[in-house]
Image (tube, rainbow, N blue to C red; front, side, top):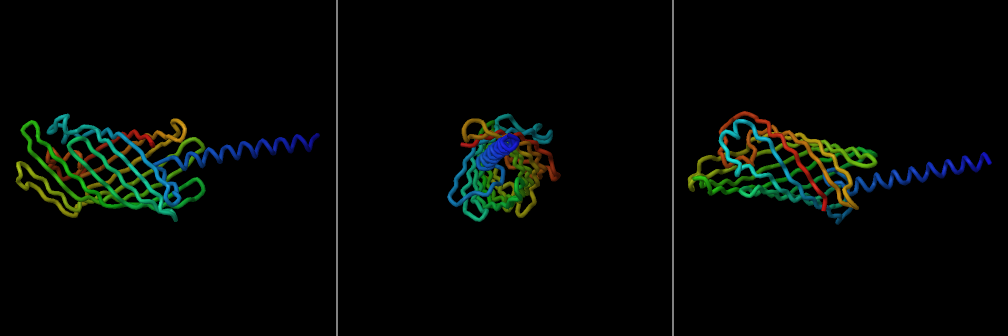
Length: 239
């Protein structure tokens, strides 16, 4: 009798453990920002909406039209051996930003480290309220990720650095500014991802950008030479 009770108790422990590990794998495999190792050919997609709080320097010069929220499409394709190709496209209606890069990740049980980066091209045009302005530029984004997986959600910390390789701005077809090889700034964020329905996940990211040049505000031709804080709240959905 005693042996039967012990055997039953052991069976329950195994069942609970297997369910926890199954849930843990499910959460890791379906989170997007969490730097999970992807198998070759595995494909992930996500949509997100970014809402930014602008500093006083920018608000005094800009109209609400300039600062429409950023809509973003993100994608990742597994390349094997911890590598994945990544890309995203975002726009606020007057500005378009396209990024393509490569990430690599490494697992320590439930903790995952990731590094990555790549170039991005952005362009914008504003022809309203007496403005006839354009911008185009080449940026570089590099980042480091620290992911922690729990049974029901993942937590990802991210540090990012942005470089302006070349930015040219025009006003009424006149070249008014040109900047090259400038450290644009840094970003630090924390992201929580959890199941929403079936294998679709929802994410909430809080991000602090310390930038000399924050490309969504290009239309007001910012002239400040110091770092400004641009906090962001990013709501995302895997698709």
